[in-house]
Amino acid sequence: HWKEKKKPICKPQSSSIAPPLSTSSGANGDSAIPGTLPPGSLQCRVTKHPRLNAPTAPHTICDGTNVLFDPSLLGPAKCLRHRPNYMCGGKPSYHHYARGAFKSNCQVVSGEGEPASGSIGLHNFPADHLKDIFDSFAALPTSDDAFQTPNDTVIASAPVTMFVTREKGEHVNMYHTLTDWYMAWQTLRVIHVSPDAVQVILLDNHSPGPLDSFWNKVISRGAPMLRSAEMTSPVLMPRVAWNPPGYSNMLLGKNWNDCQKPMRMMEAFVADVDDAYEGAHSHDLETMKVLFISRRPYVTSHVDHKFVGRQIDNEEEVIKAVKALGDVEVSVVDFAHMKLEEQVHTAAASDIIIGMHGAALAHSLWLPSWGGLVEMGSRK
View 1 (spheres, rainbow, N blue to C red):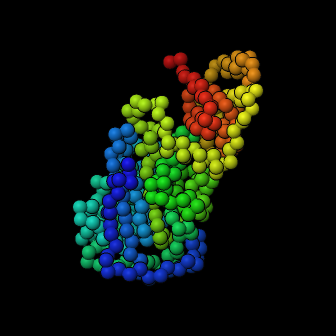
View 2: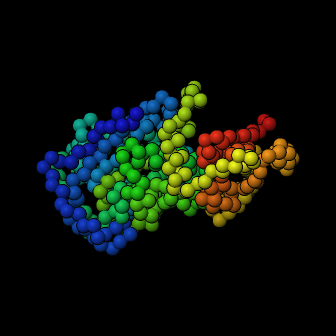
View 3: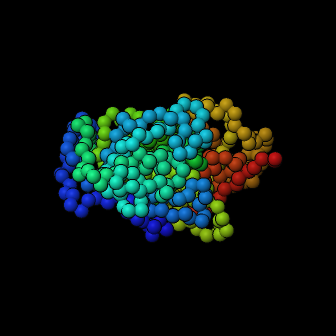
């Protein structure tokens, strides 16, 4: 659907000739590449999908070529500029972007912004981090010939850079983080890029979390994931993609009236995750492997959840009843104290997952095709 909606936003000048790029430097290196910024481009796929959340519309996937990212033009912020008063508590771990934080030697297409000033129109972007980012995007004004690169500019460490912004606090929630993972995977599919060519850069500065390792394992396989807050030099990126918000994920969609119909894209995503983590399914035909997910308060080095709702008052009785069914092997786990890789392997090796409604049940995605989920809910 997105592929059909692709349109140019910013095109390189027809007379531009790209200078050769040095390949000896990287986002973590010291080599500089002063000179003229090569001709670049920006294209977006813009749609309003009826099954995706209306507040996240328009649903947009963008990528570009020869984009300069300058981390010195980022400043800490509690809220997104174009989405005030939402998820603004705690430390200022979002960023505001000054004009030119993203820059490319391209000219804005008529109807997609202001060619004279080099400003990108914001009508193509939802009121979240994408609108913040492209509000800062500086294209080449019609009166100028070319942008120059800062003296300390380096070249990206991977052929493709993917920028990701996560929601504050929800970056440690398995379900909501899953939506970011899926959108990143889907974006790479749409633009025909393999994760083996990608480096992820986190544009937020949220605290490190127990789910961060997924990015290097599945998405950022061309070079290790970076945090923009740790970058010190401008980076020239031969190709760039911007991850859409996780809230525009089909798992949060509406109007699903055909739940018995397979979700082929999700199945392909799960297969890629299985391959990356080398998850092994049980083929024991005699004993059913039941995984019971316990939901309890916890405090770790990453997360402070002293209060956890929706706990099971008679958990021991429930587990005892399941074990009494016969021909079952019941494992009781608390995922809060397990590394992500171990969580994925544990779920993949199970036949049935049982647990209270909560983010941890997202691990049911890694179950085998014959697997099942028993989801419990509150009495209220």
